[in-house]
Image (cartoon, rainbow, N blue to C red; front, side):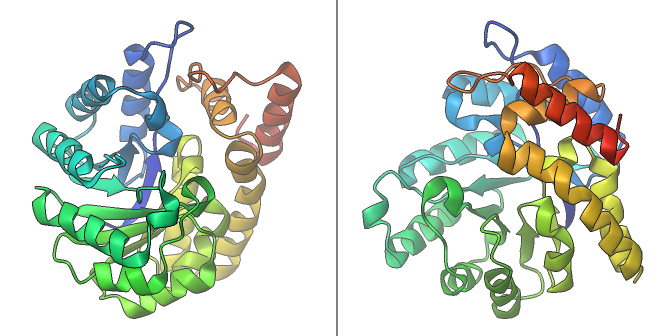
Length: 293
């Protein structure tokens, strides 16, 4: 069963927008020594929409070969078509992915009714060789997977969990209520990690854990130990750095923060642009205030 804290890792690019495998290796070595339960490759923070299929396959192969075998690797394998999703997912399975993470198709969002999405995910799960995790991210896709739909999908033996980035704690609670105990409900943002754990989430996939992995894991430990006052204080401290590298400035800020903290963030790929000098100062100040710098 999938549980604990995963981080959707960045894809470092050099100034020519090529994947910087030296920085990727540095990051994998550092994340491998943390308390993280695993990583997600080719998630939103990995800029997967900007990579070719060949780049995706090479990056996943490199990651699996260079990351500790003690932790799990989930791979984003979203494509717009069911056929494409199955094909890419099985290629990732053949490389050694422990599971795949799949967003709903969203280009023709007007046609993505619940029954269409149900058939898409079950068709994929029928044919993919590794466990499938659902990825609900309405902020980017414009589609919210309802708790009722997720509950139906959870009955499929190869659909093992969901990363929910909707920020709707009621919906998250309903998913926990209406799914079996072995279905992994993951929060998708550190801003509501503690509330998600409190209603029964099994873990989380957090952008913030790229730069503060052990702190995110510590919050889970405090919760499990019943140290709720300490957990609440840590949750509140994480709010500002989390907002800065997710909601406010996004991937470029996350990459800059990685650079500041001894990782290899590198450049974003266009059309994303590096942070301005003014925004770099904001990120630095937030990390100093938190105590990371």
